[in-house]
Image 1 (tube, one colour):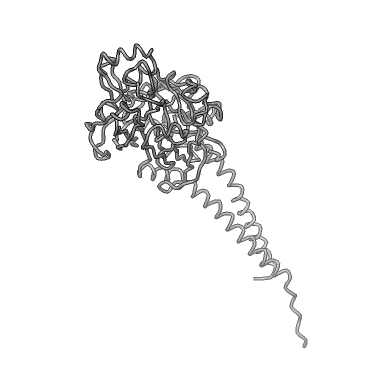
Image 2 (cartoon, one colour; image 1 turned 135 degrees about the vertical axis):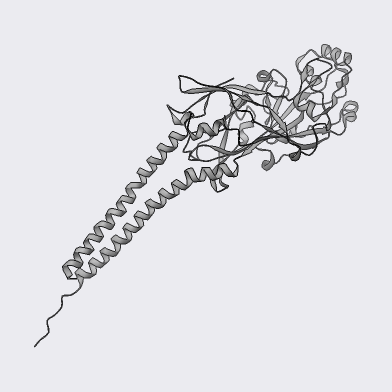
Length: 443
């Protein structure tokens, strides 16, 4: 090979290497655009998309685990005004959301309306006992008339039905209802249907996908999440939207997800968080709206119930110390979501809430004559939880993550190969050009 041929070859290699590297760089935004367009297409709620199939699927089991509180000293509470001593027992586990969404209707304004049936199937293998286990718990009817009726009328109803502050009920009765002898109506946690909801499909604006336009989901959010932005999701249990803030990136079955947790300020006192002012309906009970950790849902639910996190996590000490047996734990009792940041799909969640009612001293209600302080009494707490199964995780990784990794690997490969070829040929060219010419030999 002549010197000229070598130089030409090296120059060609340098140019080709540069072009390959530039092509790899150019493919980065092109690849990102391709991924973004694909994700936007697949995360719209319409027939045929991955988001719609996931949204309507009932294959991933959702469980509701209940822990009920058992009163250890009912007589001392009534006769001496003692603080209730409580022991929780659970979980009693039910599978829910096994019935598909009902009445799915696509509207002209890029929204879809639906109902969420809330049937439940008891899971004995995931429970500590049977639905016939008996608990000594607060009498819901007595607590209800204490909060809603004139106390003289309430006392008349209580005495006429021979009711007391506490009652013995089975798990099944407390959760799914029983006919109360005083009111003659069915009482209990029972929650048979949720909705109707109307959410945006995201077809006109992907940032609004699955966002609730009006109520009466927390299952998915808009794609390409930013860690700095909180996620807002609606919970019908508390009749409001709440936010989750980014806590950490965790690995879930080989998929990197953002973990969002409920911040303490979500349940802060209305004095500290004005968004909670509408839940401050009793200035005496809340000490002029300075009490944290409690939401009064009387106006929303029509019954005098208070919602908190389990074991009064984030609640004021006065609330926690009014009963004995509370052991709040951030790990066990907070709310969190694990969301895949590219698609916005929720792949694991735990929604934990506690149902409470109020009783307190009364001169007119005989059975409450010895009670000394207003008491927010915990009836039960629930953990609604789900996690994607292995099959869905493998599908998610093959359909999205593997393709993205392949595209990224191809881009990086082009850049590396191009740079290696460019640098190698450039160095060779420099060496050849700087090589001294040969000196002819003397005769």
